[in-house]
Length: 144
Image 1 (cartoon, helix red, strand yellow):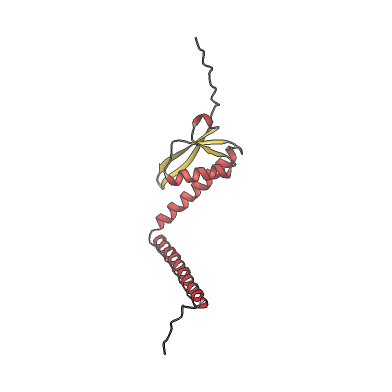
Image 2 (tube, rainbow, N blue to C red):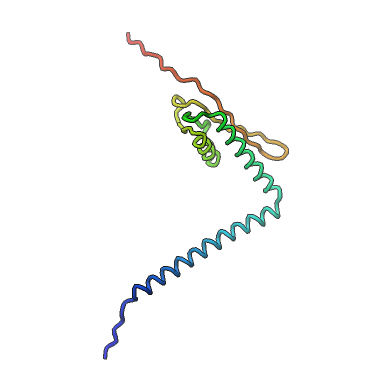
């Protein structure tokens, strides 16, 4: 008498897939909880870092409000000079939230956005300088 091994049934494969996905969800949730715990512990050990993060968040919100108040919808904004990744992303977001478009050529821009930072006794503070640019008028070329 010969014993044949059958392939795993479809139901068993589905059960294994569900277990694997559930374990993946548990691992991802545990990772998030671990990161949140480390962040909370870091804030408890270093209240100065929490204050610095709050100041940075305050500066983000202040700059966002200034973008919305200054840049009319449909405007083209040049971010100048090119900024580090965090501020470049934020300025791009603020421009989009104000209904504008980020451009890379000064000739196409209506506004220039520059990051201004100053060192204070409580840490570095940030602000934005929005400059209305004059349209570039191309001069006709005279051929002799």
